[in-house]
Structures are given as C-alpha cells and as structure tokens.
Length: 281
Image 1: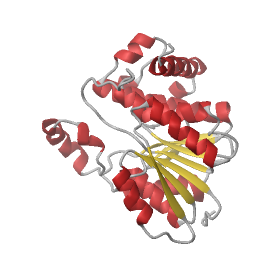
Image 2: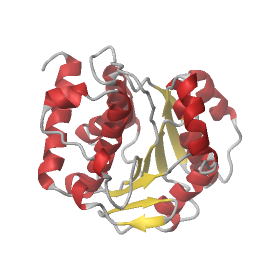
Image 3: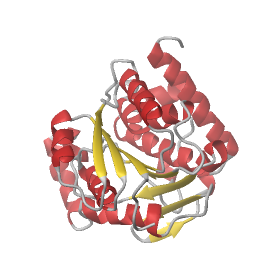
Image 4: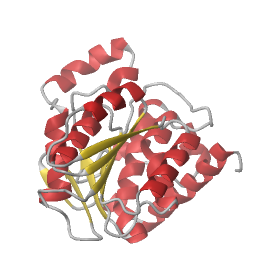
C-alpha cells in the first residue's frame, strides 16, 4: 500500500494547511488526488508542482459555505470518478461571532460538515472507501462539548465557539456511524493545535490571547499529514470499521458518539437544514 498508483484520493480544504500537506503526501505516493478548496490561485499553484512516482493532482474550486456549490462539486466528483479510495475531510474554520451563510445556515456547521452529508446522499461514500474526518476526536467527549441535535431551533441558534464545537461534534458523530450507514472504513482524527490559518477569522485581540495556549503545542501541517497517511495507508483499520485517533495514538469511539438516537437526531436535523438551504423546508 506504500505505492498508491491507481488509487484516487479526494481532499477537502486541499489548498491550504493540513489539506494541502496531505494532498501532496498522497500525490507523492502515486495517487491521483483531487483537491477541493475555495482559492483558485492556491489550487493552480498546487497543480503546477511536480509530482513524484506517477501521482497527479487536480483541483476543483468550491466555497463550502454555499450548499449549492457543495452539491455541484459533489456531482462533479460523482460523474468523474466511479470510486474514491481515500477521502480526507480537512476543511474547517473557526469563528467567534454569529455568522450565517447566504442560504441561512450557521457558517461553521455549513463549512465543516455539510459536504460529508451531501457526498453520502449522492452515493460518493460507499464500499471500500477509507475516510479520515478531522474533528475534535478524543477518547471521551468533554462535558462542555456535549450537545444534542434533537431540536432544530437549538441547532440553528448555536454560533461562535459553541457553533464550532457543534460542527466538530457533528463530524465525530457522522464518523462513528459511517461504517454502518455507508459500509466504508472511517477514522476520526483530532489534530490538536496545528500551525494553519484556521484562526484567520478570529479577531486580532483574541488571537493574541489564544497564542500562548497554542505556541508550545503547535505542530506543522506536514506532521499531521504523516499521521493521516499512517491511518489511511500504512496502518489501516479493518474494512467497514471505525476508529478514532489523535497524535498520541488510536482509541475506540466514545460512548456519547455511538448512541443510535443521537446519531439519528443528527441525520434528521441535517436533512432539515439541507431543505432549508434549498428553500424547500
């Protein structure tokens, strides 16, 4: 599996940070990599980089805050690739204020989570696909991060740091149920503090306050990319199973994430939000 010639990998958030580092690593192992990101200029720069071992890199541009664009790019993927071997969901933002998309969705949840639900709905996640979903991913869900998805108005009202925590929890919940729902192999990964631009939306004064907490713990994107390749390729989980990991190693899903009712609530509210964004709900 060290040589990935003939394998197709999709990396969201692939034009910067962890996503770009992981896309390069997969390409340099020989995979045909499709990155999805918002910046056409950054995508073009990545496409021009020389590839090693027969790998390639193609870029698709989409703004993940737009469900219309997410649906369009998912259709492009479905039309262009009969099967996706590896999916790395690395897109994410961090905002500290209430902010909504043009379609009325809370911004963090829309950007960080909606793509996976759309990919699943259009059959992109199936069979032998191996997915790594970057989220909070810890052996236990801390009490302050425990949120329910059984009330649509409550989900809509969570914004700022609460909204960020909700998006992270949604991704971990989706990862936990992915093998059962889609038959894929799923890994949830908590990267901890990484030197990326995810905090670019945070006001400067808050960035200054947060800096001491991140300084010592911060790793580089290529360090996290190496972890992700180990999870995807070098030490894969058994087919159609789920595991979670962080920089300290692997662990099983927290009991909070495996509750069937909570998982069903997430899918129900996701469907309702999708209808809202489409103007049919």
